[in-house]
Amino acid sequence: MLTGKEQRGFKMRELRVQTKSRPYSVFVGIDLLTQLPILLLRHEVQTKQKLFLVTDSHVYPLYANGILGSLQAAGYDVHIAVIPAGEKSKSLETLDQLYSDAIKAGLDRSSVVLALGGGVVGDLAGFFAASFMRGIPFVQIPTTLLAHDSSIGGKVGINHKLGKNYMGAFHQPLFVLFDVKFLASLPERELVSGFAEVVKHAFIWDKQFVAWLEGNNKALMQRDLPILEEAIYQGCKVKISVVSDDERENGIRAILNYGHTIGHALESVSEYQFYTHGEAISIGMVGAAMLSVDVLDAPSSLIQDTETLLRKFSLPTRIENNWSDEALLQVMKRDKKAKLGNYTFVLSEEVGKTQVVNGISEAKIREVLQKLKRGG
Image (cartoon, rainbow, N blue to C red; front, side):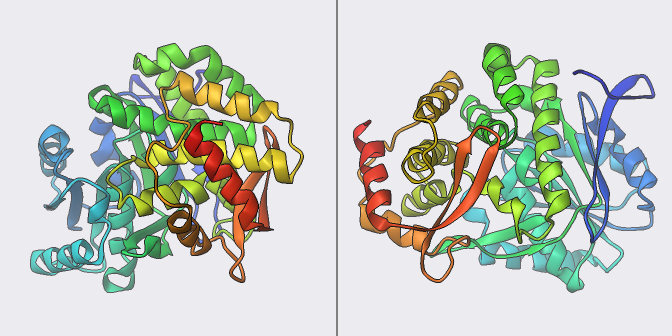
């Protein structure tokens, strides 16, 4: 499985995303960050174009100076904006600050945004790029495992106080650069959180990928970089297969929200303070498996298989706080997948066979929430 393009003495694996708006590449490998100036020139970003590097307070001290040095050595004029780390930065207030910083820096329609960070940075910087001067190019440089999912597909946006990702756009990047070496310095909780999206990709798409994760979970948890590279590569392949067929989430792309209805509700009611995104999605996938058994007559083993794999990656499978059903249900009813005021979930008949189900009864959802709370 470990194959890829060999370029200049190192391995850079390139995947192509084919969307109606524009095709682009996803580059995955170890020690790729040094290739950023070369890739920018390859994508016709000239040194006379200003670069706007958006990162957060956690990533900045680790990597920003190195990137800044290599870009400046190549002749680029780079301006940096550092946002507070965390989900609360996906806000109108932070977005407005980016607009101010960009205007003061003299950015124009030829400028290019570099999103260096996790999903929050990618979503925020991408939405800034989509809306500044009616749209300027941007590059995704994800630094977390979780962001291998969010960096592909062009969905960018910010949160509203009443829910997640209510303001957003579809804005495809020039390219995505994923240097697996970023994961060596990732805090343990953030690494674990990222495995939730990897597991999600496996469950919605491929039994073989599930089996591979089961067999390699120890190496992945121990940060074996070549094995992590393979997990990211396979996860990216799943995401690309889906978004290439459905760029604007009018059909199959919705299956990527497996586990997200309950997951987003948990994030919202806890004001993004209790669970990481991956932890919330992990619990949401168990809830989705429970509903799948009840609603679609999926085999009961789906629940056990889901929990077993998630626990191998030290992910939670039960709700650890006693938020009211009413609060969670209220958020679920406002979920972007909901139609005509009905509850909508992505459910699975079996591994690799997933569908969107609208109109699930509140009683069934309450039953699942109680199981998730009491460990049933």
